[in-house]
Image 1 (cartoon, rainbow, N blue to C red):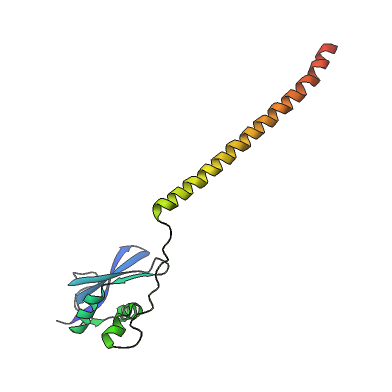
Image 2: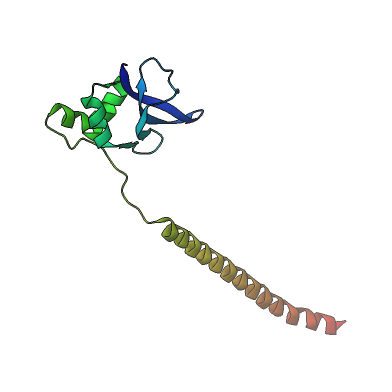
Length: 149
């Protein structure tokens, strides 16, 4: 049986991600896979590539042929260089920098919302105070006019 390491398309229209799988070369693109060894998500920035290096080395060792796309992914992760014994086995995989966790982001957004809410209520109180002072200034001006009648 001729095995290939290729991509299996998943996801919805216009937002595809892929699984890196081992398949018989005669099966259809999204057919039954022998084994899944990783994932590839081109929708993130940078693209997310996760491949089980040990399983990839095994399948390459027993003769599985990678497609062009998977070969490029294996070169990025460094698995192809490791298999061939070439320089640069660390690969050129870029990872997303670790940012604050979800709880910290939620807390930051809530604190910002509280600040905006406080500023809005302060502005409303200030406007109400100005309206009251303006009303008190106008009231004495009207009283003498009422006495003159």
